[in-house]
Length: 276
Length: 267
Picture 1: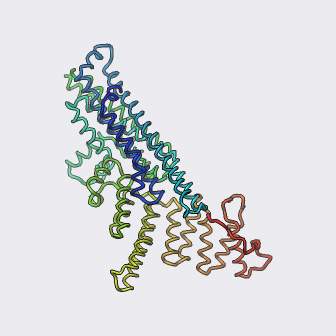
Picture 2: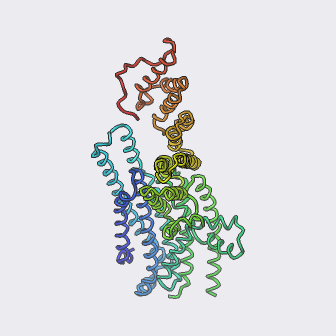
Picture 3: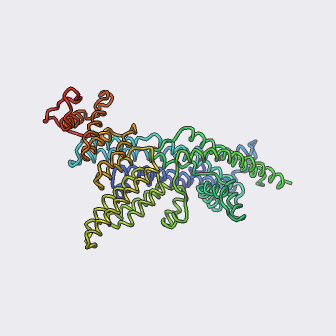
């Protein structure tokens, strides 16, 4: 965790994330008209910013962990002590998971601040506008906006985003056990991230489609190796007020933990055999 | 030897992963479908309508943001009064986010109100009949759009209410609007004015007996259960209906309300 915190990229990405979150309200005002649309835009934009910057920190941060230890030769005194390689790898992963958790909590806090500011702004706009009568219809609109802003289901969307980036982090760690360069790791992890959003499409095509053997083989590889990251994308549903049962949450979190565990075991197996 | 051992271990992990992954994903897939999460996947048709940047954003899991930017494009088309572009953007936005009620609601309003009115006064068409035909086409497009929205979101009152309102306002058919208001009123989260709207529609259609039935039904409930209801308004409407229908005094249910008493606000 400390290695990543010392890196400049971490602060740059975090700063960008915070700036994007804070500008959501500005973009919403210049681009969309009704308050309901503006709140939707802020929520879409905010949750997307949390997801993209947390994912970037997960990919870039994790990709550097092992190569940095090898380049600085700091790995040798650690492994010379009675420390198992599994412990070393797990420590790296746990540190990154904690850092991602703190990053997401920080960004969520700022996102909450932006939403509360939007609420204050809308209320002030209604009070200040002499053409808008404070009748039951206006009160209905204001209370609807307040309900949209104080939506506790947003926490569910953020929680699943966290488990999504934990998976991405585990994949990046796995790649770093055999990758020869950081840039290769970053690109490969990003490709897995994109394929992860197409996994369900690939699975459907593999199960039902009439593709040539080679295509089927490629679809099979995606289906078996790549995680279904779409399952963690519940932001749309939450923003549109669709119900999101805890059962679904738990099952998705279970899936995320299972996948991350399997990837970490694979990373350990490769790292164990690696000549250092 | 090491390589062989490594391969065996990795194959074992892959086998375990495949079994576990399939188990989790099949159950998640069913829930994902049942909960109506997500929207249309990226297809060639969808890709051809999106810019490269938006297609990449969609691939990266930013469906909501992509839909918002498409919607903003539609907003720009509205300001520029380029109606075909507006329709294209609206239809694309709901493909991306089929469960966004505001997209369906505002999209139909753009078509049935804004576009239809703009075309009805468009001097580009010299023939009035042509203008009226195009106006009707836009109203129909807005109506069809709401029907599609209802198909995608049958569990919420808003779109039923909007469709009833469209039929009443743009097709001037209050009786045709009644079934949609009735359907909207069955949802517990529907505001109380939705129920009153049914009575107003019957009155607009000249169906006083049916309207009276609605006012009576609304009146003969425990008033304490609905503190936000406009009881004075219902009493006034019901009393007027009793007068018009010549209901015998002993059968009347509404108290006589002085004419000076008028509701000051509506819910």
